[in-house]
Length: 146
Image (cartoon, rainbow, N blue to C red):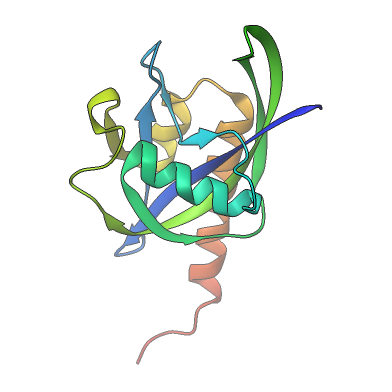
């Protein structure tokens, strides 16, 4: 696919509970994740982290390995183009009260099952389910704290 974008899948865990951060899209106000066009001299995962800050006001540790992708129609130079959007998990460490696109979007923290129900893109749903599975594997592999 000729056009690419990169997305962050922001998440946090507390007491073994995984929560996913969703934001609304600007025009249709649908639930999605922060995403954007490649940024010059930035790796795809770095672009995803930048978008997470600009669109959702979160900062954290972004995974260098893509967890999934979905396709999205975008307008580029007044033409409709099909983009492949690579998704990178981002473990949220800080949530800002103010961020560049605060007035243009809403954000919510939800359980993975709810997040998967709220998003439209099948590839994004799959990435949410895969992230939840990965987190469960990590928890079960972690040695018990004494």
